[in-house]
Image (cartoon, rainbow, N blue to C red):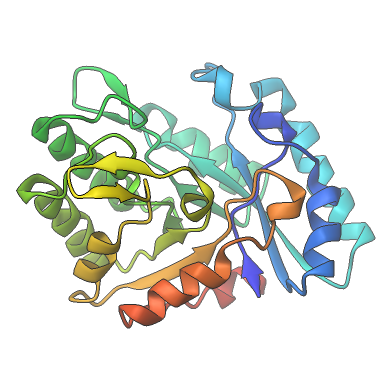
Length: 260
C-alpha cells in the first residue's frame, strides 16, 4: 500500500508530526509514504490553514530525520499547493529546486475567477463559480508543477446538485487530465466526512460517483490516498478509493518515478 497525501500539526487542522505518521504507516504495511502538508507561502496568505513561512525549514528537517530513522519505509518529501502565477517561481525554484522536494500536489481549496479568490468550502454555489473552478484546476495542471491533482471533485462540498454545470466543469478537468497526462486523486478523506443534503438526497461531499463515472470515459489515471490529518488515519479509506476505481474501471497511476 502507498499513500502520498499526509499532513502534520503545522497546518493547524491536523495532529501529529512526521514520525507519528511513519510509525502507524509501518504498522499498516504501507511501503511508500508521502508527507505533503499544506505549503507555506512567501506572503503567508491563508495562514489559518497552513504553516508559517518560517516553519518551512523545520518541516523539511522533520522529514529528513524520519527518513534517517525509518529506513524500512520509503518516505517522500511533498507539499500540497494552491496554484497561483505569483507563486510559480517559489514552487519551481524554492521547493522543487533549493529544497529538493520529491513532488508537489495541486489542490483547489481556493480558486480565482480572475477578480478575487474564493473558497471551495462555501463560495462555490453558482454555475459561473463552477466555470471558474474548472478553469483554475486546468490552469494548475497546465503549470507543469504538480505530480497529480488532489480531490478534483472538491466542488461537491458546496455545489449540491449534479447538473449541466457540474458535468461541463468535470469534462473540462477530465479532458485536460487526459491531454496533459496528469493523474487525478480519489481522495480518502471525503469518505470519512459527514454527508451533505443534495437535491437527490444525502451524498458524500466528495469523491462524487458521477464525476468518477464520467472519468471512465477518458484515458486518465488515478491516485488513491487517505489525505490523513491524524496518524491513525494514515491508511484510512484507501481501500474505498480502490473499490471506486475498480467500479468505474479506472487505471491506477504509476508513480514509481517518485521512489527512485
